[in-house]
Length: 60
Image 1 (tube, one colour):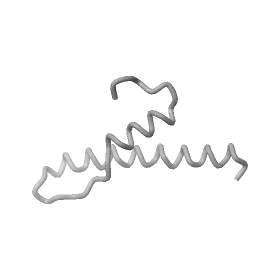
Image 2 (image 1 turned 30 degrees about the vertical axis):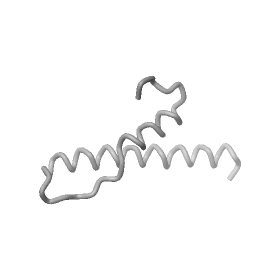
Image 3 (image 1 turned 60 degrees about the horizontal axis):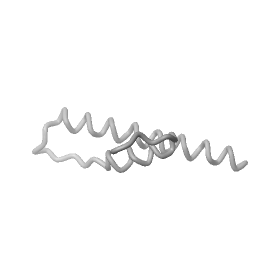
């Protein structure tokens, strides 16, 4: 992210790329996994909210 996106939807897209799906690996630190999975859950929540807003705007 060299520049801050001006639109929230662009920021959500940037975050989705920066925080990919997390797969548990027992050899990794468990707290690190929990932090990364929490970040990913937040991004997924933002993506769902954006979809809802777009559907409402399109009259679905």
